[in-house]
Image (cartoon, rainbow, N blue to C red; front, side, top):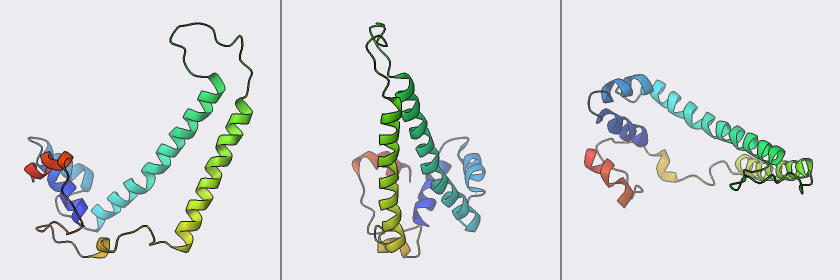
Length: 142
């Protein structure tokens, strides 16, 4: 629960609207089961939304082509390879997803960290969390 606690503390540090944002996003200031359910739901659905946007982008890129900064009509010398490129991209995506699912089904905790299963203490930073220079502003807020 340490990550959710840190995010909640960061949001609550925003002047004037921080407390309202915490209550709106997390359902309250304390980290409990409903907070973790919202956190899990957001992190579960977000990759699928990104995947759908990437697929739409690839589809329309292959369908219409990319933009031309000179404004010259590039359709004159263009051969329509849209179905071939789309099938090639979909085949690569299906192979990657199948390999990823095989890894997840056979070894669900293979990419995990055992430190993630420890009970969190919001007053102590876990040992496996290393401070990085680009998080200095966040550490100063906390």
